[in-house]
Amino acid sequence: MPTITDILVTQLKIVGVEQVQTGLTDTSKQFTAFAAATNVGSDALTNLLGPAALAVTAFKLLETGIRSVVGFFNDSVDAFAQSEDAIARVAIRMRNLGNVFPLADLIAFSDKMEALTGIDGELITTLGATAAGFGETRAQIEKNIPAILDIAAATKKGPIEVLNILQRATKGRTQGLFGLDVNPALLKGDLTDINNLIQQIGKSVEGTAEAFRFTLPGSIKAADNALTNMEEAVGRLLSPFKFAFLEGLILELTGITANLNAIADFFHIPTAARLGEGKANPLAVKGDPEQTEYQRQTAENTKKLDTFISQVIGGTGEVAGRSFTWRDAKAAWGV
Image (cartoon, rainbow, N blue to C red; front, side):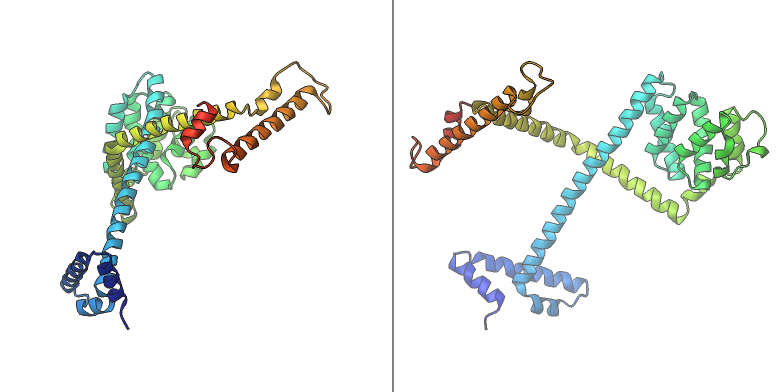
């Protein structure tokens, strides 16, 4: 009984593609060499699968690799787009606050803190903008953010959540401090002073964020941030191509939409917007003239469309006897 490989090669010979057999054989040899180099048992693998199956496997691996690369590029552009969305919001906020901490400098400061603590730099940038929104100066932000990151690492809370708790405490709502493992009664000085509050609480957990960076969970998170940063860089490089594609797609879709509406207008197909035309009639009842006219036009246009279709398909029109083309539609519909 012939094998699948024999049948495949026979069929290929019939259609005049004998050279494919040579390609399959070469592929088989390549896989044999690869298997031997990796101690996989090349003879058993080759005998079991045959050269044709090995070639298919090679093609599948290639396809998987291509899909992975394309998927990575798409993910990279998406990651860059999300980063741009976040940074754009921060940029507008900082501009409206008078650029108390120029964005480029804030991003550089955030990147430095990310390298030190493993906490996402984009999150730190947003934290800085939030602090600026509370009225803090650049000097205060640079001094307080490391302490906030330490408190967040020690309490397993988000840095922005920590800042909000501290800001509420300066307004007299100190009960939230218990969530930071802090007893407000033990704090000294003016608790309405955010700097005093942050430095007092941060002193007891100083260095926590940096220390956590060099634990296994911290290393995993830092590696994830590093991968995200690389994806964003790749996405930035590819973004002009995707931007051009999307803008071109928008133009095409706009043109298609205009053509479809032109076709609908040719047949005078009404929409619900027509119900708003004419004089006001707050006591509309069954048989209302506007409703009746709407129904009449719908019926008339349906009949007109049915007639047109029957001429084209039924063989009574001028285009009978040949295929109906888009050129026929443009001539008939005037678009």
